[in-house]
Amino acid sequence: MRTATGLAEVCRQTGRLTQAVDLDERVHAIRTHTLGPDHPETRASRTTLADTYRQAGRHADAAPLYRDALTDAMRDHGPYHPDTIRFRRALTDTTRQSDANRPPAAERPHMPERPPSTEAGYSRLGP
Image 1 (cartoon, rainbow, N blue to C red):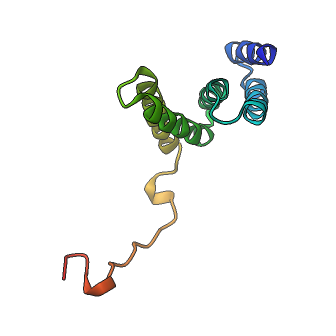
Image 2: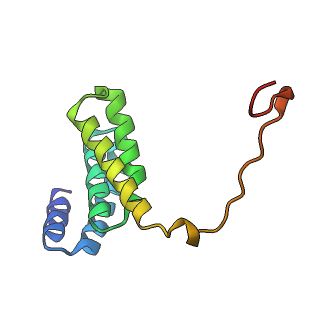
């Protein structure tokens, strides 16, 4: 595993991001299978994969991994731990980048608004 992780790092540093993504995906899959999803090495490989996805411009793939990492860090360390802050920032930046790559609102298909709820005699403004 360490060899594959080291090779992925070299690929990232030399700009061969497709190869780095492939290696990081393999490492993460193997660690998840052998160590389980909550093992520290599995969590580390998940954030490395998210970082590589983000570096490769694959923000939609990185966001759920950062979201999982943030959830784990909040549960384990609380809201002010450096890891929690790092994952929150990475998720925010990744989401912003993903949104920046979306077409402008005028080019997106129109989505009708949901009608107001009238359950139990209540409207949007009250009884």
